[in-house]
Amino acid sequence: MAYSVDSISDNCYEGTTCLINKYNIRDESKLAELEAMITLAITSEMEQVALKDGFNENDYKAIHRQLFDTLYTWAGEYRTIDISKKGTAFAKHDEIPELLMNCFKRLKAMDFFRGLPFDDFIDEIVDIYCTTNYIHPFREGNGRTQRVFLSQLIHYNGYEIHFSKIDTDELMLGTIHAAHGVVDYLRDIFKEHIKPTLR
Image (cartoon, rainbow, N blue to C red; front, side, top):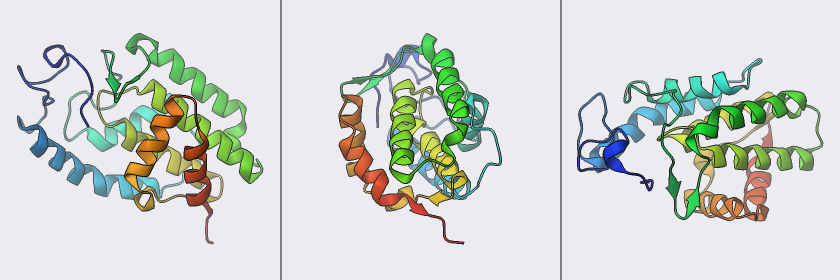
């Protein structure tokens, strides 16, 4: 989904909103198809991996790099411009490093949510989802990076989630509502789809 940006100043081919890529594809729809194909298999594999430790900004950047390195030279690097989507303005680009550092510092201080009662765990997952969505650190691929990271964090706590089973329109609607301060929809989605890991 296209962001509101100045395409000339944001690593796009001149006069287009198509991101400069390693395949030199200049058609945005064709690039989107290739991007989806490449990242789907990687995402499916990464979502089921339980990290033993980590969950910090370097890990977050590494997830993005692994997902998009075959497509973009800037994979794993923070965006250098300000962006918005569907009326939602994301964090200013120069605030990204500090905001992410504080986000993951809090996560570590809370022992990565280990041992929380289920309802409290859901609240924290919603909170970190909303926080990382607001920060939106990358030029493209934020949602996929976020889903891999959250899947790993959820798995680490003895639960699982399969984002492929969540209606994308429903998740988008919940995300938009949450960006405007209403998290009930998002909370219901996570509560329904986060289940104990079957052993």
